[in-house]
Length: 59
Image 1 (tube, rainbow, N blue to C red):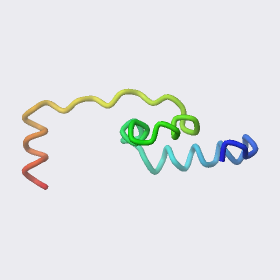
Image 2 (image 1 turned 60 degrees about the horizontal axis):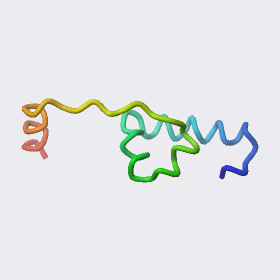
Image 3 (image 1 turned 90 degrees about the horizontal axis):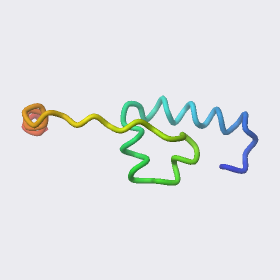
């Protein structure tokens, strides 16, 4: 994929960013090579403990 012309790579970058948002950073942490395509992503904000507990009980 990285050997593709920049125009095509830019289309893939945009599609991936749209599909993965707002969790792009989490996916990059699982698949580090993805950062070569989508670029550096901001850190994910941590949920307050109460919010995390509420989210988990809803699962």
